[in-house]
Amino acid sequence: MYVRTEASTRGHVFSVMLACMMERMLEKYWKTAECTVPEGIDERGAISSVIVTLNGASCLEIPEPTKTAQALLEAMEVRLPEVLEARNIEVVTRKKLSKSRN
Image (cartoon, rainbow, N blue to C red; front, side, top):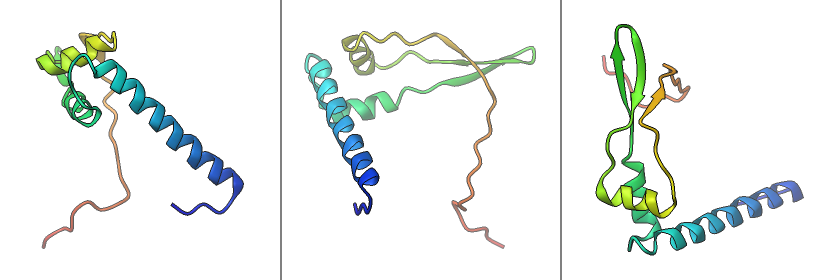
């Protein structure tokens, strides 16, 4: 990482230190679950939502997490909501992810 200005250097150091602090906190929380931070992040990344539509109204339902993911959430004292409001936001990227085939 090359930084040229003092502000860029400070921003880089801040983000690196914040990431280190977050990793240490996750290590502390997940020690009882006998899970490393990368394993825990992968497990938590598997928690997703499902769009449920009924009579034209939509919401996001969060399925039951795996036992490991539930243990990680409980270790951090985090409780997932059962339902979230669906916002139907379309994400657009300027970068072409695949080449069109003719």
